[in-house]
Length: 250
Image (cartoon, rainbow, N blue to C red; front, side):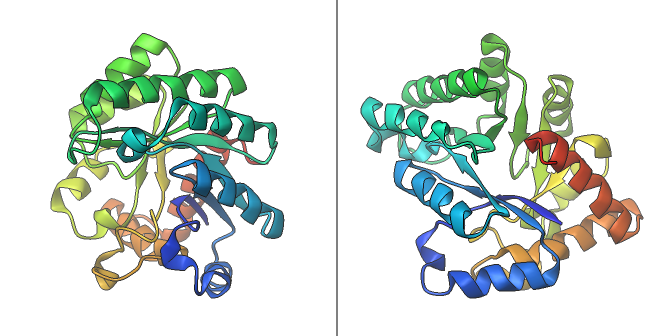
């Protein structure tokens, strides 16, 4: 199983990271996209890959970090792409729910991420909160259509627009407890679906309020299979095939 969105670089894992990784491996997780959300954690993701080669790093600056990141730090982030282990640009995007950074500053930084994704031909890992329509508009304006809208919680109409421009949709723990997300999920084409945990955040129903971790991805997968009336292993094969295509994993 491939966990397409995880933050093993988060401080919540610093005391037992090896145990978390061991549990993930033993549960059947074979690959984790380990995602940075600022310069420091992006560097950490690359370093972790040197010890655990199946933790594939993504580098980016989360929209909530926009106000804290200088242009100089963004240039340093781009230098990290000299590391051939990097498989994606992100976490990037737009977050209008929290008032941490002005919308125009977030949009400018998002466009900068799109530019380096194009330069290195890497997929984008996109965070959207109350901002899906603006994200779609910016992607169309920039003309770059590779990546995934992670932790998708928008409408079916927005999902169709995202799929039309060639992006994937990531689903995690929210699928296990949100009726709205389940209803959207059941109407989507499987060839555009991938699964994630977003660990240590957004744990599935059985672990809500506690730290999430990669081994819990199978609880989301089981719920998803139940929604679609499919066998779990069949859905896992489809989702992993999609993830390998998205991140060009051989």
